[in-house]
Image (cartoon, rainbow, N blue to C red; front, side):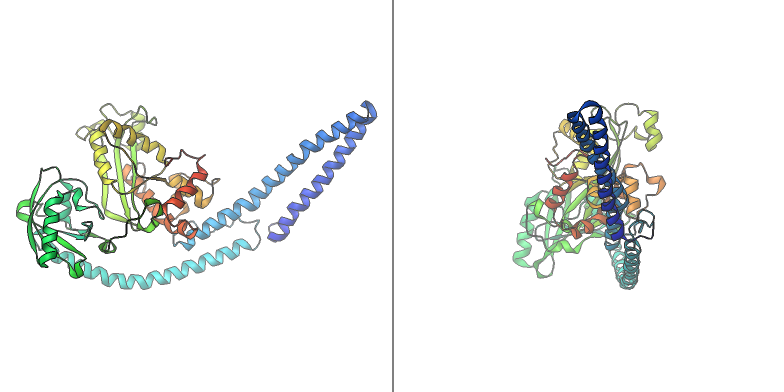
Length: 470
């Protein structure tokens, strides 16, 4: 049976349907004839009609189940595996067992997948050689900046952050979590920055200014220095007033693609690769969002199709009541660990700022968003951003009949969640972000190249989860 071609196998399904229909019609006629001999012609016709009327749909349903299980679902899985390979993800590969009834299709797909993998490995080796040289240059730049006793931020002409170093991150964090592509006006009062920018543009020279925190609680002596071709500026914060940690690490967080601001477009029409995402997860005291509480928040930012490694949020939350032992056994968080942590409303305010100007993403989002909306309402905060659920994205790409747990999705995409990070808010958020990054090119390959198209497709699977973009 395994050696039959796919065309012959499909023919056999139709032949079985025809033969089964003929056999069922014969059986109905025979039973009707027998019934007519005992109860009259009318009763015989009625019995024949009942047998045929119920038997034919049952026969069709049975054969459809066979076809679905042995042909349709394997083809769907095969297509999904090829999409994973085409996107460059190190997925589980072609499942030869589930595709064993597809004739030569599975071996052919496996050959294509292996060739793609080899081509990508060759390309990756060539890229790695060039990347090593770039990394060496970056390391030298970091070493040079480490000797400079200032904090540095690079912003584009729209005052959006393009680059910041570790000391600048400390300065920004005193107001709110630092974010690439965020407006500097989220951190500093705009008047001094705008006046300094106008003076810098007019003279083409460095301008001194005083940068005041948005809430007036911080004050930094700073200098604004123009970049070439008027594409933006460097904001240099003097160390003497910033009180940075002298031994602090100074990683550079940057994305030079942001130096040229993107023309404003409605969010639904914006290409996926130009979107900012805030991927988050919660650990809680239980599974009832209307009565349980958050004990940990974890979040990761994704920008221009990549995870921003230095932009994460890992926050223990004091729920204000004992954590049930059953919940602690799942996530490992105890009352002692959260004793000195901020409460839910303060933690939600921090996450709210971290999510500003970003699409919110979570796995099984209705559960986590229920907590955010409940606490947000108490703190006077709303969540107007679109919400993407990686459960629904998985259903769009791999079919609703597949398993869509976070573990299953990561396994399908060839991602590994370290065991010690599973069921931690940041660990699960990071795994969800990795899955999102892997699925973005796959969505684009399916013709869903903007947010509106993706949301429209996820709504087709709304029976799996609540639609949060209604």
